[in-house]
Each structure stands twice: as structure tokens, then as C-alpha cells.
Figure 1 (cartoon, rainbow, N blue to C red):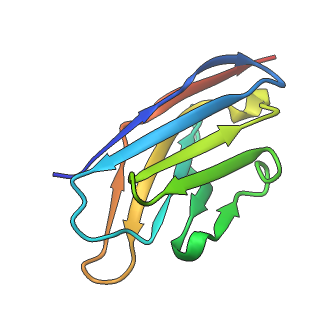
Figure 2 (cartoon, one colour):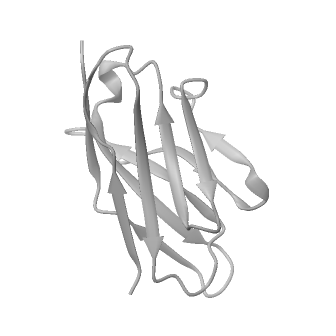
Length: 118
């Protein structure tokens, strides 16, 4: 059974930093992508950042230059370093793992709350 466990959320003042971590277990076929989405109250879940095969990374425009995604294939972990946080970054953050080739899959973590006060 695949399980993704996130940690590292919390309350921080604007301009501060947080580091989120996600550990995946139970994955049989290696994933292509690992990363993060977030969902603010009353809004749809949106993409934040991901690390793909070959170590390429991709970021949503509003977090590029402030957030850094880091993946460790040996440990099946993906971290999100968040710097210069803004109140609009407040959301529940979900990590995901995805495999594009057959057998394809996408799994989600349970989410971790990040609150940025002004």
C-alpha cells in the first residue's frame, strides 16, 4: 500500500521560512515526478513545484525564486524549502508522486497546513 507522509507545516510570519518534507513508501514501480500542490480556503488545488526524472524542476510562477524543491530518489523523499513566505502562501500543502509510463499512477499525501501571518 502506497503511503505519503508530510511534515513541517506550521505558522510563520511573513518573510519567514518553512521546510516541508514528504516520505513515500510502498511504491513498487519508480515514479517520474514528485512534488507539491496546495489548496487555499475556497480555492481549487493548484500546482506549486515538482522534480522530474533527470532532476529537472518546475515551479509555479508565484513561487519561483522563493521555493526550492529537492528530491532524493534513494530515500523516496521530496522536500519543499519555502523562503520569503507571503500571506497568500497560506494553504494546505499536498505532496504527490506520479508515474507517467504504464503502470501509471498518482498518489497524494494527507496534507500539511502552512499559515503565514502578516
